Image (cartoon, rainbow, N blue to C red; front, side, top):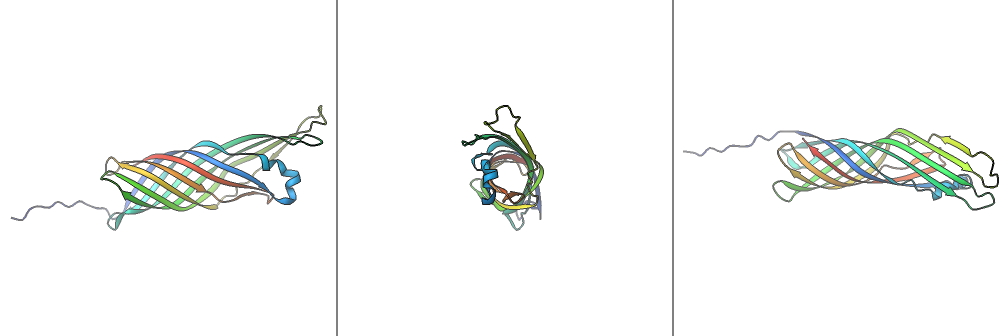
Length: 219
């Protein structure tokens, strides 16, 4: 009598969805074109870097019958940030600048994922790919005061700071995941994202690097 052997049904394609939330640090540095340094010099001393929460959802595609270690990962993540800096220029007028910058945008990384199993339930994974950014809101407010005119009202300028949509950058992630069932996987990931250069009217450039700690659950 031949023994019975039960085979596991392996799907041709697998699709997983992952609600997630990230703690992100945006390292935002300003640079000004040489011909505008006299006018916009205060940007050189401003620091717009800060922390923020970043919720989103991830989608993972794989072909288990070929290999379960490689997959394609697409993510939609919302990131909002605001920062305020006060800059004082020593000189004949001792100008004081209050610079406020607020913005929000959508991150869309498209990445390849490779899993390295370390036990039946645990694995380390790498993610690498491109990232698209889409601007949602942005606003820049500059309030300028001069000490040689103490009774004069401060001059306030409100400028639309354009984070041009469809910017392209790159992203890299290193994470750990634990499988609790065939559908439920809990993961935590350290992510670096460079969304590409951000330019305002060709005079002021912002170079942004985003460092995130992301956790979520797959089902």
